[in-house]
Each structure stands twice: as structure tokens, then as C-alpha cells.
Image 1 (spheres, rainbow, N blue to C red):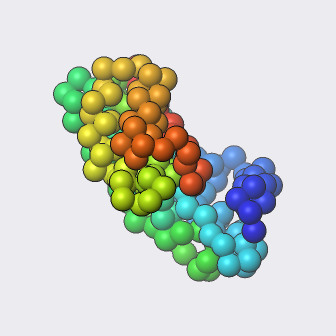
Image 2 (cartoon, helix red, strand yellow):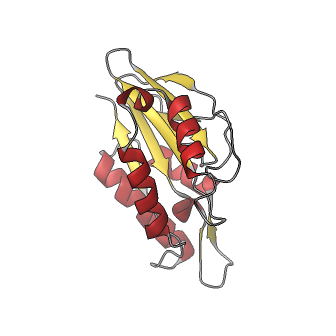
Length: 178
């Protein structure tokens, strides 16, 4: 199945979720896996699902085989991966996804990305933009606003590999807590 068909199927499943499920990453990912199991024709999905609670300055999250995003402390120029364990969606029935919590206070930035950027390589495969380079560039972009930082990260990946075209889809989302 194409990525577009998988996205459309997932969107239809998500439209039918009850509101309460959407506030619990564990319930959300567990239910989504159950609903997608056996319907993806051997394909799978990865996902990071987070609920930002501004009143409590936290993110409740779960992960289903996706690259862990980063929480950046903009003032101290440090970051940490937001890790949790979870298998990919749609291949194994009856999985339970763990749910974790992390603080998300003013001055923090959340950086979510797909492997299209962290596995970008030159056409001859000799130059690769990997997670270590991405991490360094995230720290190099802390003084930039989210749009400029996003542009910087994409352009840095292209510059390092000396190619404009990405082989895989690229999604990059930066969220600043103000």
C-alpha cells in the first residue's frame, strides 16, 4: 500500500476514536494498533503521540517505533531524547504501549522528525546526514525561531549531503513552549 493510502486509512480510524482515548497516549496507541492490525497488507506505521498539558507544564507521551523526538532547553542549550518503548503499529496484535510524562516548561522546544531527514544521504550514499548531525544542528539552532530553525535543519541536511532531493518523506515539527 502507498503511504497516501496508509495515511487515509489511519485518518478514517482516528475520526472514530472517542475523545477520552485521545487524552491517553497509551490508550490511543493501543487502540490504534488493535484497529490497524491485519488491515495494512504487511505494511506498518510508526508514531509518536503526545498530549501537551499547558496548565501542568508537561507532555504525556507514548511511542510506537518512531524516532524519539527531542526536548530542548533553549536557555541552557541542552537537549534530551524523549524516549519510551513501543513496537510499530499494525503488525502484532494485543500490544500495550507504555505512557510516560516529561516536563515542558516555558523555554523548552519540542523537535519531532521523521527518518526522511535523519537518514538523508547523497545520491552515491557516501555522505549521510544522521541523528548525530541532526542533534548538533538542533543545538546550533536554539537562538532561532521555530520557522528559521526548521529551515536551518532542512538546509543543513541538504548542504551536508550535497543533494536537494530527499528519498523519503520529510516531516519536521518544532513546538516552542512560551
